[in-house]
Image 1 (tube, rainbow, N blue to C red):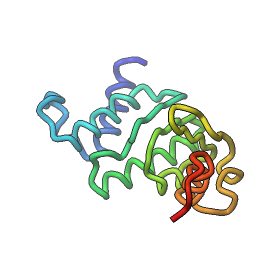
Image 2: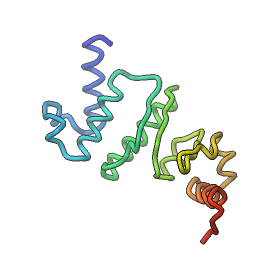
Image 3: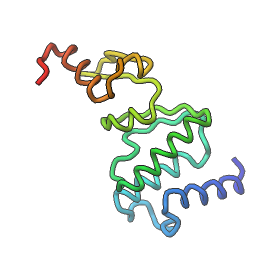
Length: 139
């Protein structure tokens, strides 16, 4: 990516995530939430086709978490492949087309979210799968 394109994209992302005034601050001096935002900008500045996020809304205030979620939807809708590791079921419900569930280090199910959820929300489907996998009783 050429310098001008990178700088323009960086400016757009810093504005989107509301961190323009922190552009010259060392990451180590930022708050947890600001570090998360800076990490997102660093991850996205080169507009990758494939993106892997581990808890992308962790440490963010509600408003910024919505900005991130909306941006992930935008990326998905513009043809990017996004892999998200999260325990926030509402995020999965909102942005994911496919789901893989890992329990005890094993992929216990993977496929279209609609098939895995069977009409339920992701949280209820997860606990059905969990209890089935562990042989536990539902409370």
